[in-house]
Length: 301
Figure: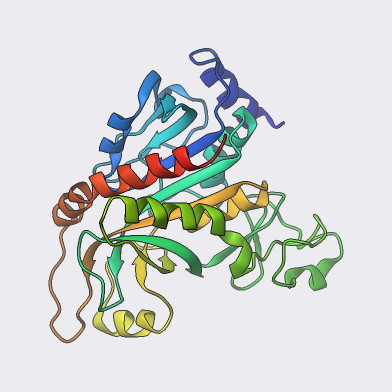
């Protein structure tokens, strides 16, 4: 365990001794979901050594430790983004901390713009797959490689075997020395997705399913970009993929949930403000709450 990871874990352990099995990351406007928890400890990110601090709007920036639906849960009320100036390694650290503390399942939420014309603001979408347009790929060791193939996050080597390590098969069954390319079938857990859809049915509200397109941001998309992205997926956002890749590289199961805060209409564009994104996301909170509680109650943890 490296020094940054060990110090962050030790700081949390001084305030909370329980072993969590599920981690939850709450996106923009979704911090109120912590009301569904019995919070045993609340630790601001600034009290955790090396933990990235959220600067985005409506991200509280605190770790909530406790219980939800009878399950020990570690919840990040607010996340960090590449557009805030953080590196991929910075965004990986909270996931590595969760894993070291005991988390083996990650539920990750975000607020996203709708690309699918059938979606409505306030919809929740279960992520089946993603398209990574953030300009990096992740490796099991924590090495990141940009689109030109240059190593990042302090690593200068391309792998033990040099040039050939830059490309891998789309499978998790690769040598740990190779960069990880996660297949669509393995990035998001199908059993967790089915449980989420079942919870929505029990709640008598529609739940979409589709593909998340991840971009670095922080700018909203142009009309041309919206038209292009519609060919790729169903929603677009500026988060989630770094955490998902980190979690999967550690063998964690992942459930991804997007809240649709607006639907792109390239031929009749509307100006979307951060306040509006937060407002719509907060309206969708009861749906997310029911889905998350349903998923936690569905499995024997």
